Length: 79
Image (cartoon, rainbow, N blue to C red):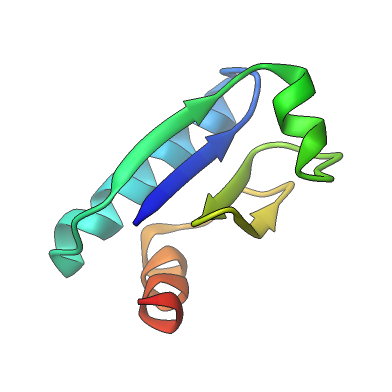
């Protein structure tokens, strides 16, 4: 599983990355977490607000910082 955090590197993007890593640790799911900061790459996903959470090339959330328990719910649906 490849998880991408889309954003400019702001505190919200960092918080989403940390919450995602916490969710992965809690569930024991093995995934690679990648930060994507290039605006052309972000726009290519159709995302107009960051931070965004992309799992296996599917945009799962954008424009908000998900808490780790919300991310766990998403992970359980996609695994």
